Amino acid sequence: MKFFLTAWCSLLTMIAVAQPGIMDGSLAQAKQDLSLSFFSAFDFALTLALLFGLIGAFKIYQNWQMGKDRIDSAVAAWFFAAFFMILSGPFLRALFGI
Image 1: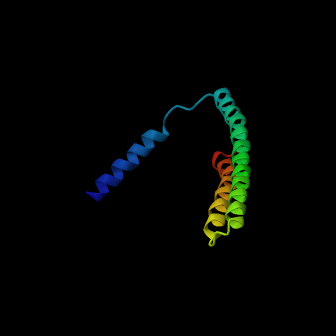
Image 2: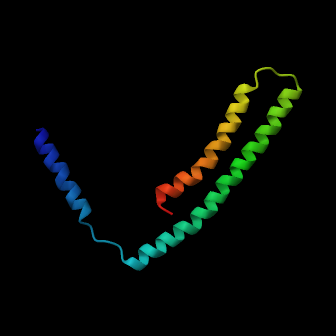
Image 3: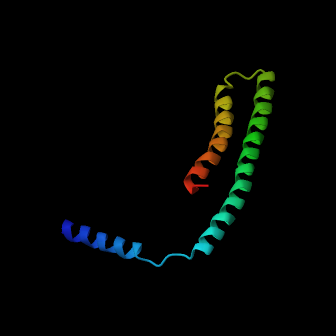
């Protein structure tokens, strides 16, 4: 049964690989469109990281001035939110090969 299932999956992958390709001009146009929209999305991610950092800094400063103890979790939460947005740009750039 396992052999039959393995053979069937292998056959399906060969059929899927044998699909007709896209013409070179269309592929180049799609890559260009993706790169144009990606860089605007990358700039947007950096802008969001900046906003997360600024808002987090103001909220933490306010809590600190109000005398609240244990602001460590808020510092970590805002820091890692901004850090995630900064790292999402290079990750997406590597994922799409742009």
